[in-house]
Length: 124
Image (tube, rainbow, N blue to C red; front, side, top):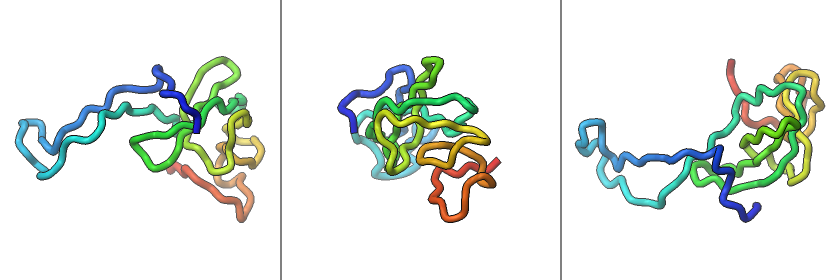
């Protein structure tokens, strides 16, 4: 895990409800407090097909149990993706049909060989 505080352009503040509803009444007891968090905007779509991205950082995400990876595309755009186990800094990832079946690549299920571990499956 890299020791950075994250990409500021891919974060937004996360407001807490403290167990209150929209009228301010307590809806759930014993909820509140905790540390202030920033929400990391994750790219679940991976819709830059055929464009190679390089993994720049692997970061801790306080909002989920999985690590996240900051990737930078060839055109300079940065996005967060869920970090698959085995992906390291400097690796190249590609998304879209026709890409290789390697760790970190995103492709349709019908193109993934049998016996391959998959993660981050999305229904259409």
